[in-house]
Image (cartoon, rainbow, N blue to C red; front, side, top):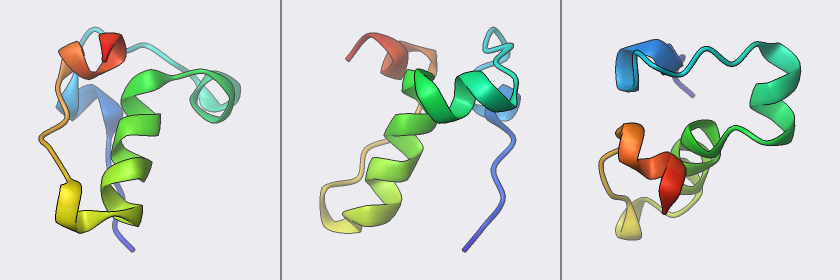
Length: 50
């Protein structure tokens, strides 16, 4: 487990706790990377659109 500050990955991501759990695509991308490290890709602001 590691802590990730979403704003370090995407300074434009101003999501708060509820948004992170419900619909934040940058957070979702980080979780997907953690669950499948073999297919992990770097998380950036563009991750919100993929």
